[in-house]
Length: 394
Image (tube, rainbow, N blue to C red):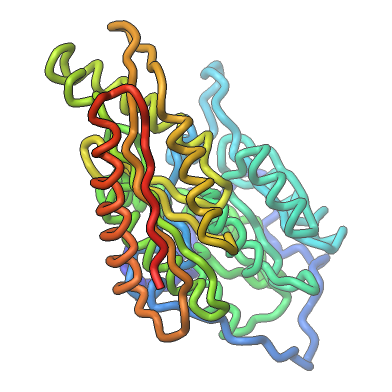
C-alpha cells in the first residue's frame, strides 16, 4: 500500500448505502478533549518502518497475516436469510473508561459487518491474553491508558506476531498522535467526540478490505507458499530489525540454521507430494517448539532458520536451538509411511552495540550459522544422529 495515502477512512458512503434503522447522530457520551492539551511524546520511527511494507513493520519480528480460516473479506457482509452461519468479527476494546466501553459496544452492534464478538481489556497483559486466546481480528485501542498508551499495546502485539488490525481512538484531535498511529501501522485514527456509527462502520470496512489486499501482496513476497512460514526475505528483514532493537542495551541476537537430512531422498524415491508432507509436518513442529519471541522461516528447499533474542548468555542460544533440533529429529508419519529425519544445526550469536550495523550483523550471523551447519554436517552423514555446531561472535 502507498504509505503516502491518508490513514483516515474514505469519504462517506451515499445515503443509499447507509445503515438502515440506525441513528446517525453523534453519541454525546464520549469524553470531550480539554482545552489544555497534554504533551504527547513523538513516536519513535525506525528505519525499518519507513522502508518496508506495513505487513513487515517495526520490532524484531516478522510482520504479516497469519491464516485464520475465514478470509477477512468474507466477514464484510451480513449473510442472507437462511445462509449458513459464518465466523464473527472478533473485536477487542482496549479502553479504561466504562462509559466509553458501553458506547463503543452500542456503536459496534450497529455496524454493517456480519456478526461481532466484542471483548474488553484495560491493561496490556489482559489485552494480549484476549488477543491470543480469542484470536482477535480487530482492536479499537484508546491512546491514553496510563501508564501506557495504545502504541505500547501495538508494539507488544507485533512482538508476539499477533495478526491484529488496530484502530486508534482518542479524546485528543492531535496531529502527533495521528502521525504516530500511522507510523505504528494503525489503519485509522479516530477522535471520540467526532465518532458516529457510520464513520466507525466505514473505518472498519476500510481496515478489513485494506488488510485483505495487503495480505495477498504480503503472502506472495514474505511467506513460503508450501509451509506458510516466513520466507528468506522476511527472515533477513526480521534479523536486521532484531539487531537494531538490541543495539541500545547491548542485547544478544542469535541465528540458528537447521539443514534437514533425508528430505531429498524422499522426493527422489516417493515423489514431491510426500516430501512436501514431511516439510509441512516439520514446520509445524518447529512452530510448536520455538520460544515465544523467536521467529522461524524457511530459507531454502530443506533449510529452516530461526531468529533468537531476549537471552543473556551465548549458551542459552545453543540450548534453544538444541530444543528445535530435538523437535525435528525423529520419525515423521505420512500417507506413504514413516520417514526418519536428522538435522545438521548451526548456531551463531552476538552482542549488539550502538555501533553495530544491522545489515552487517545480520549478514555475519547468518554466514557464521551457515558455516556451523557445514561443520555439523560432517557428523550427520551417517543419517542416524543429529548434530549441532555453535559459534559466538565478538
